Length: 407
Image 1 (cartoon, rainbow, N blue to C red):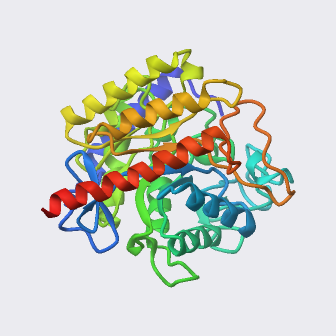
Image 2: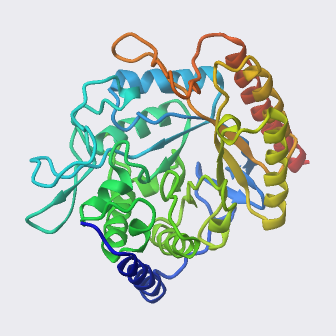
């Protein structure tokens, strides 16, 4: 249903007030000494794993939560082949209701390849109209898919950065959660509405306490997870709404799971790092695409340096966790080489996570990313070699710093 501007403002004020009155008590982040064995923690502007520096060399993949088991293992195997130590993904999809009584805002029955959002009926959340509340799907077409991802990542000694939901509506995400309550507003309703905030808290609690059916480990007890992100790119407007939502939800996640790092997953290009303010946010994130921003490669390199300096000022790590150069750019490999060298030279910027690693689909084809052209493949090309070399250098840097600390 349409909402007037006055109603929207009232909703925002009500949401901000409720978050102040009802938000959970903030739980301080664990120090490196307080984290359990195998858990990544933060120490100053860096990450630590079992008392040793941990430099992130990572890849994104958006379809792990709904791809077939074969598609998942191909991606994880290619991550290992690249020398990556971190994979970032999102928990999805979100629908209206399985029986169609609550509309789904996207094509959740698509038979396209997984990379092209062919989820083939998989979903993790829906709306139970009769009960008037969110319903969770832990079955084989639901959260059991993430059980498999986590267990296979563990077998390969990979860490995962996991966004609890996608803000965008490509597979439902926060936009579908707003639609459950009759809103088509893209930017404000989700962060301000008491209903969506309640649903999000319930979902976060469910995920964190969910027990993996494969290995019997609750997600909050699983060191395979490097960090939880509140959402992929929670582009909540206006800024006070975002900060209030981040404060409430990061505090909630920490209250249920104090063992893991928490970040927001925000892109932080328009208003940089306002979401870093709460103590319950352990590190900053940003997403940057020079071609989208109409920046030169050297301009983007300067932006990396600026954000590394900002990390030093704030005393928290800031991770470039999404970035890409189109395959059509003849300077793709050189740009990656320059940017990753800049990150490697800054202790305050603890690594990188490139967008996006894709592997062969069950159709036998690599995805055709004709629009963005940011796909990274295990094809032995110059870009693959640059990423592989940078991942090896990150591992070597971690070892050198560990040896220096030991001395």
